[in-house]
Length: 165
Length: 80
Image (cartoon, rainbow over all chains, first blue to last red; front, side):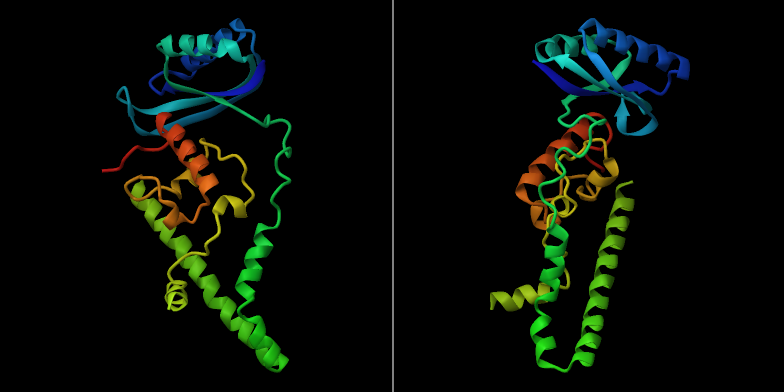
C-alpha cells in the first residue's frame, strides 16, 4: 500500500552550501531508488540546535514529502541511518498532503463562540433585572479586566519562554 | 464551598478550554517549535494538562509532537 510520508533530516552546518546541495541530491537518489514519488521539497535553512549533536551547534533542516510503498520504508530508513552526512532524520506519516488542504478542517467549528457564551452567561441575569444603560456599562467594566488578565498571561508566557532561551 | 474556591481561583487560572480545540487544530506539527515551546516548562518538561488545560486527546498528540521535535534537536530535552 502506498502511503504519504514526510522526511525531515538534519545536516551539519560545518558543511558549505554546496556540500549540503550534494547531500540533498544524494537523499533524493535514495528515495527514488525505492520508487518513491517526491511531492514536496523544502529547505528550512540553517537553525540553531536545541542541544549540540556531534559537537555541532547549528544545522540545516531539509524537508521532503513523498509517496512510498509502505513495505519499503524499513529498508529506506536503514539506508538513511547508514549515511554519514545526516546527523538526524525522521520519517513521519503525513495524512493530509500539504498541497490538498482543508480536508480535515470541518468538524469542530464553534469552540470560540461557546467560550464567549460561557463568559457572558453569569452576567445575563443582572442585565435582565436592571435598566439597560447601566447594564451596558457594567458589561464594559467586566470585559476590561478579563482582557487585561489575558494580556498578563501572555506576558507571563513570553517571560517564561525567555527563560528557556 | 467548592464553588466559592473555584471563583477565587478564576482570577489566577486561564480559561479552561483546550488551546487546540479552540483553534480547531487536528494535527499538531512537530516542526512548529514556537507553538510547542508554549507547552514546555522552564526546565523544558512537558507541561501537565492541569496547568495547560489541553484536552487529553490533544495532550497525547502534543506529547508525541514534542518528543519528535526533541529527537530532531528542534527542542531541548532539558535546560539546566
